[in-house]
Length: 389
Image (cartoon, rainbow, N blue to C red; front, side, top):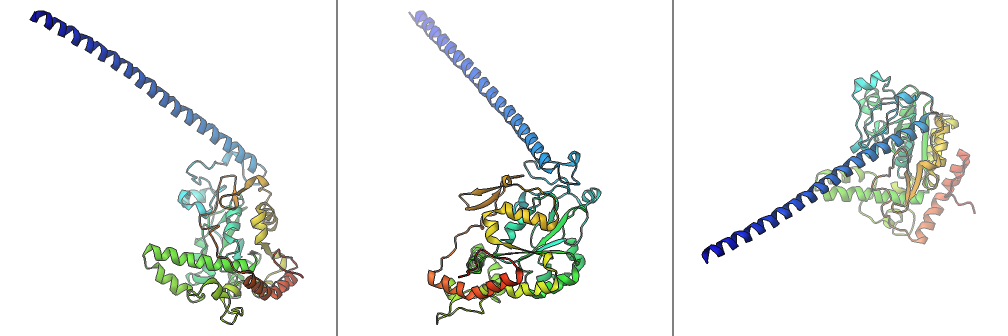
């Protein structure tokens, strides 16, 4: 009896082992299939990526084939990490610095690049679109832009002209070196630029509705202070001391612009910077009118392609930009670059602004209108925000 039970138990164990072996065999097969699918997917993605990169190369070479001095055999595409491999075609926009890598100086010099003083300079005006203007034009192959505002003629002039030159990007002879600082608009800065830069330097200024500019400036200042305060560093005290010299940092937007009696605060820095005619009158005395380009900020906001065409003509560049280079981003509510790379401005662009009442807006418009009419008179241009009735 015991022998029968033992034999039965052995048979049962044998059947269990066979079932376990079958299950393991099936699991191994499924695992093999899964690994195979994953590997095939990786290979497919790499092939697709290479094909996409090859297409990008063809597109960029087609775009640049008409640009004098840029030969197809030396064009190197911008790959995923946006490494700038050749100074002849660098996307050096300051808004992607975390993805930009600069070649060693020795290699740049071997490519025929050199540092020199600017051929053109964006002088302002603050909160009128200088950053966006520089951002877009910097993608033209014949532009070698500074990566960020150097502020040499305002806060670093004591460093000397050789230091300033050393801050310029490496560029080929047929490229235009472009500097930009929204603080260069003042007459005292004009004198320094006139003294230190070549007499044929091209001057560019972008202007916008001075009321909207004042609101944007107020928002920008307080955003800087809020960020510094949240960081918990000593930057907050430094920013308060620096900005407090020019701005009322305590009052609301309304109180910064209108006093207790309901009158416009004519000495407010928020407003004084929007009286463009005062500064431009001085620039026109120092430089020929055809050497100064004035851009309506509203044009840049609504049609950046049109403004880039104007910039190309003014700077003597060959035609590069088309309407396909730009697209309107409905989420950010402003235009972004579509090609040669998909690129939008940083997060602070398009931040929420406080709203002025209609009465205050009208009062400020009436304050600025005589200055704006004079601006149109001395420049020979019309501007979108100027009231003529």
